Image (tube, rainbow over all chains, first blue to last red):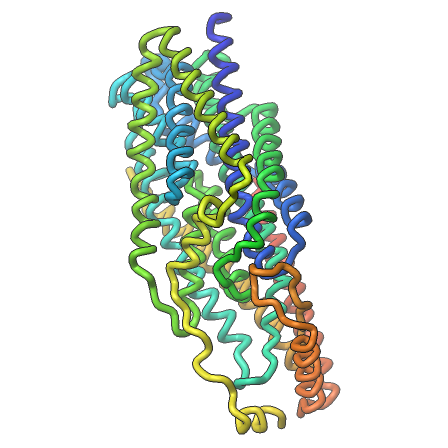
Amino acid sequence: MPDFSLIIVLVIALALIFDFTNGFHDTANAMATPIATGAMKPKVAVGVAAILNLVGAFLSTEVARTVSGGIIKEGDGGVLITPELIFAGLIGAIVWNLVTWLMGLPSSSSHALFGGLIGAAIIGVGSAAVDYNVVASKVILPALIAPLIAGSVALIATRLAYLITRRDVGKPDGRGGFRYAQIFSSSLVALAHGTNDAQKTMGVITLTLIAGGFQAVGSGPTFWVIAACALAIAIGTYTGGWRIIRTMGTGLTEIKPAQGFAAETSTAATILASSQLGFALSTTQVASGSVIGSGLGRRGSTIRWSMAGRIVLGWVLTLPASAIMGAFAAGLAQLGPIGIVLDMVIGTIVIMALFRWSRRNRVTHNTLLNDIDDAGRVVNIQKTPRRPTRRDRKKVSL
Amino acid sequence: MIDWSAFLVVSGASLFSAALLVSLYSFGLRLLTTAGRIPLVEPAEFTGAITVRSPKKAAKEVKRARKAAAANPLTPGVKRLALYAGYACFVLCGVAVLYGVYLIVPALHR
């Protein structure tokens, strides 16, 4: 099918760009806390994150199989979805991502991807094209449940960390030592990110190859696909790092080393366990859930409900909104070659705008790191109730 | 149909592993502190991100830690035991992480 080749190359290129922006956007998730608490030098942190994203992408293919083989039915009765529709879905996802980014709404690039694909499939083939069972059990439910799991795990882990290291008031408790632990926990988060997020792109490319007839139905990603996705996400992570370094001057939510360590361990554990079962969840949402949970694990913490509501709204909104975008793009693609060219033009403009925006000098606190940092601000933590009195100190110095 | 048990597995596995790692590391820190080797952290150099301590404050903290260590009522033998136990906790924590990675990568155990 030589006439298919051009569109397939286009889809692959677009998917890799999506992967790149994913890494670009998400370096912060893994590395913001260790940089903020001073555990790692920014340049080292960014380099480590890039390498671990690369390694993580090679670890497993379970999530990629969910994307390529489960969500969109391509089984009996021939292949239903065409590369054009996948193309439209990707355009929809990228556009939605940009919109939320500019508006400072917390959203998930993974859910944008799925939303776009599902929307495009429904418009292009009809609602029978989507396997709602798989969508519900491997995308929607994990999306809702995984942040809750991560949050409660982080809460318990934070409690444990503080309980175990608790000492009398004024006595050195050595909690600063958690700072070194964060080097490892944030590395695990980077690894988990590479595992889950790079696989989504692999899944999309494999789906395209299957739809184009280059690969057998139900087969997993081939080696070059895995390698390409791993590279794209690693390069994205590395190039995204400079933004974090710049943000350091603007201040972050205060996260104590013990808390950060507990949150990151929970994030990594949840993502890795889910990847193992093929759940395609959003790493950003899981990380946000953990940060909130670990904040609640500290003494004297209260939730700021308005902030929490905003975050949850972003979580819930992404899938349907990007589905509409994908459906719109698919509708254009149905017009034939002209529609695809139109889609491409719109997509290119959007991508150019994205890079123009990110290159601009006005990197504010609001446009960066916003997802995790917002999550950190959901929880309000009171300062330590009182300073140790002279008598306390005397008692302690025994 | 929706596989609810998968969610139970995910929450159980992540709770178990996160709690295990965090507890091991915390016990390690606790034992180090008990042994009188209080981990002191260098003042961070990134302004704005965290509260930066002045060298004076840092020196004060070092002094405080040394004082606390000197006032430690434990005998040297017990201290050494605590120190080794602390190191053992850190090693166990590292082993647990490596085992977790081993479990995740299918290529390693087929």
